[in-house]
Image (cartoon, rainbow, N blue to C red):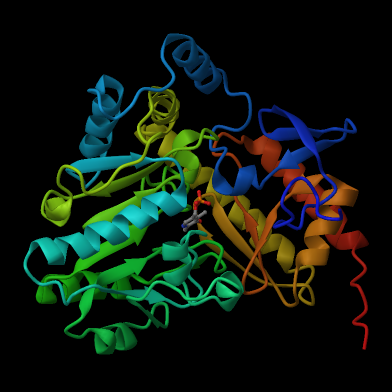
Length: 397
Ligand SMILES: *Cc1c(COP(=O)(O)O)cnc(C)c1O
């Protein structure tokens, strides 16, 4: 037998974390890493945050899981809190980002089917989007590498250029149910949609009675210095997927919707065995206790500015290596002139700092939101040392 017991779907690196310590990870071999990847924008409170681990421990001892056959005081409380904090009137809880996006897709389809217009089932999505790995969410992305081996895909998606309003407008037809978009593409390369584009999509949706669905799985929950990135644009979506940072490391996803958008989501139409379990609710409450706070969010924005300023100054020393710095808050993309995977490995293995690569020659810098200036200094020191000692691997012909 040559297949590994862990299904070999990931290209795993040599780091084997066994313990977390605030903004650092400790590997099996005792090596310490500065964690500016944060489980891909998940560990918003860092590792071993006392408020979060305490809430989980207390809830685990009290009540971990019950069926959605029963009333949910824990779910009602968290849903009410999210409703109070956002555009939404109602929330469905699941366990991951992809499930949250699946629910937004179902909300958009059900909106039209419930409204007597079943021909409107197609969501317009955007090139280089990433929405998850279920069959529905890979179908919502144009990326071939996600599709290969898994055809046929789910019908009902159409891809247009990100941030191109003319293409988006031209794609609207009698089958269109709405738009599904990451306002800031994460895996696609930390690309921000422009103000005009987002406003344009909102207008198209208003004009044609379409659903504007945001995937804020990566950019939400304080990452950009806003609780959710849509606030930056001064418009509201009709439905939105949230996950990653929402549980701070505990698996939870949420689909937030307006009452109007959720008109098709009636009793029996959707569900999840684990969705809304009391343990997940307790984790998300503890995360919101820290993040849903104006002073905390302002601090995320200020730290993001400082880190970004340092990075911008730094890349000037290595114009042959780096092209630009982009992003918002603590969702930062460092764009390389070449494929950056070797550099990410060098920074990790030889200088002890963790980052994540993305499409478009981007390295994502998505640290815990609780970093302080000492962590920014440590990161810049490691990055500078890595750039100074970096020997690009010669292309083999
Ligand atoms: C990570 C991610 C997802 C998928 O989340 P999972 O929890 O892995 O299912 C969906 N959308 C975006 C924008 C993401 O970054």
